Image (cartoon, rainbow, N blue to C red; front, side, top):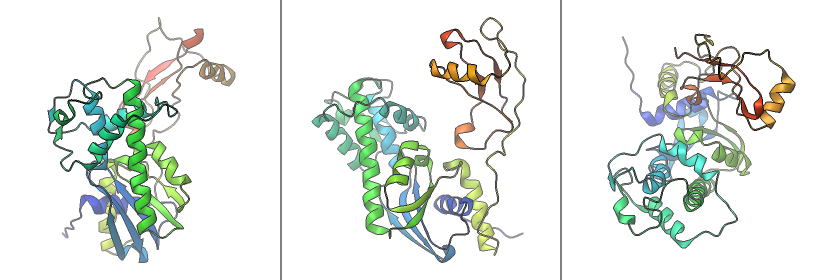
Length: 303
């Protein structure tokens, strides 16, 4: 039996390049940014040459750090940052009033986050004099800080892309920061790349695929993976909704449209589930009773 060894970094690179619709790729740009890694790569000659351009270490952890600074439940000396905090900060940034003036204090805290070397050993105590310290996460000041940090991180990487990568290449994105849809939109609109591909398993859920593809390429196999996003389990109707809260009704597109217009959040489950980082939690197919419209609910069982 032959054993091959790959790295976490290589698994991200090979996953994104081999899953791309235009694979096999002779030349492209790759961005791997996550909790630890934060680099661009110039993929050339089908991967025979890969030039690395480190940008900023631990971008995901730096992004999550702001949530910890404002969260009074996090101690001043936090040795680790929860991997759920980055996603929460994405939501908070959406509340920001971008017309509000950017305070000097927000700029100072964001600069500190981007410059402090051991961000994984978060020392909130160094910011004890800041209004953001333990101020609570759902405040206008925090919202504005989240948006500013998001802008700064993206701008740092965009500047690096323009400095190190020739324009006109397709961009492959991997790493947990690829789950930030706002950043992905900005990459698509920045004008430096011809197009942008973000795999559905862009975070560490795709590392096993990347390791296998690295081995496949090493053994002379194809540099392309044939895949379908709908490879998750089938929907399983294993739960009867509470009849006092839900009423099962046939699908009516007009009623569904009105329900959404009235402010309801609707999840529509049909066929097999997609196999992505956003689909790891059980799904609920339900039409909210907002606005007096009743719907149905069924629980999706994890396989």
